[in-house]
Image (tube, rainbow, N blue to C red; front, top):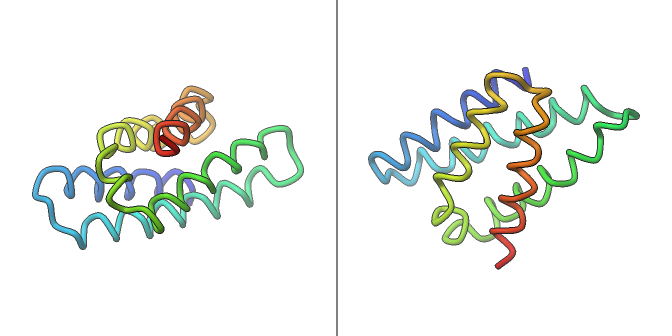
Amino acid sequence: MAQASAADACAQFTEYQTDGCESSYWYGVAAFRSFQQAYYSLTEGTDKAVNYTFCNEVYGYLVLRPEISQSHISELIETMSILSLDIEDENGYSKMSELRNSLKH
């Protein structure tokens, strides 16, 4: 579920980047939330659970600050693309952390 949701988020954000349709952005946000929740279920109680923190912060920006998030859509697509191929790829969570830092500024 987490990997499929990451792939869906990547596809929706890519569509948003291509055509600028706001609904694609919000469908991507919904898919990101599904990814986030599924990932949490997979990693709860493990040493990988810390990655959920990055995901949670990025989700907050996606929802509460869409104008900032949309300006980082390429980074978001890159991150979700990595995770759509392998939900456990640490490079994806490293990118998620970088994305979180970019969204803060």
